Image 1 (tube, rainbow, N blue to C red):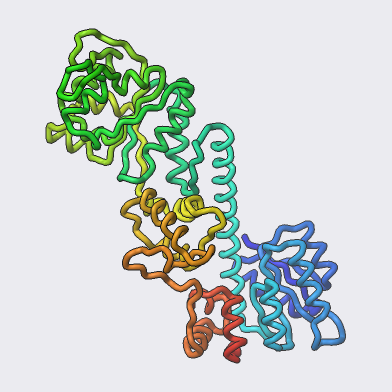
Image 2 (cartoon, helix red, strand yellow; image 1 turned 180 degrees about the horizontal axis):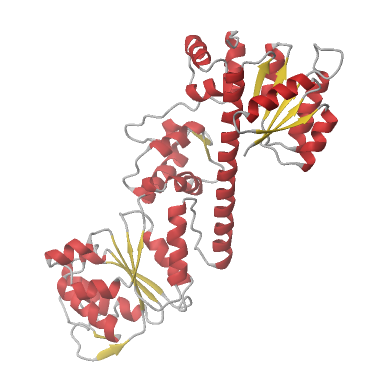
Length: 443
């Protein structure tokens, strides 16, 4: 059950609040002075403080209450504090809200308004604590991952990416083939590099072959090598990727583009470690860790007869699936910052635009956008207009509702500023600034 600390030298006020909260399953502690309140805070966990502003005969200045509030903020910066007072000066309220007060209510208070503010703040505090715990747990896991493995400079923040990294590091030391699937530009080669860097063959070569970048008639020669005269233009013998990767890792990108003849020979190498160069009948032996990647649906290709079922199951001992960048939004801003030129930074409008963009080209597209913005932006602070994103519709960082909208929101919220601010999409501090500028009083 949540607990509220009431600091008020008027016993009748404190008891009335205590009864009100007990009817709504909220515990209450009472303190009659600032000193007693601070002492209670030092030994009892509470979710929220309601403090009076007047503890002296001078009931207009609230000086002692201000000192108490500032001391609470100093000792417990994350604890929400509602100020309760009989004197009503908007300027003073705005100053205290700017200093971090959660809300400001006048005596005599409205029970429903007070309860709404208290309930909202307690729920917000609980949600924030849960979020902080989750972020701390994720940060701890990330540090453990970074300290225990070579991640090849990988930048990430999203839990979906972290799960892939954990699995990649787990399987790195197992001598089994790995299939990395995901759309183009998601970073499949980087994951293959991480597997290699943490494997038993980390000191060996890391050789890359993009099976989709070569004509079908040349793929076998690329994979297995060729003797002089094996095909038109082969003027001398050449080693293939398997020979080059001996003692290390061969990364076969776009494996779905491998023709059926090449698939059959690849299967044999995976099973025996033996192959012949084109134009030769001499068998060669290699020890190679194979990692493959695809953006294709290999299951559908198997059913269509364009990808061998036995090869699929041989390659797919472990599958790592990389999600599109849009499906792991927490990665977008950290990646963007890592791609910026030195000394450049992102304006809030640019951050909003990056988060709103669908990223059909994934990480590769983001890298290109940031390189272009770094080069063409007129200053070091990159704004949304510098990104050159198509059909850009960027939400404003801080909406600007007009006077009528604010007044109507306050009326609907019964004068509870926190509730009205949430409806308008503003922070409490931002709403108080607008109220002050537009001379709007709470209803």
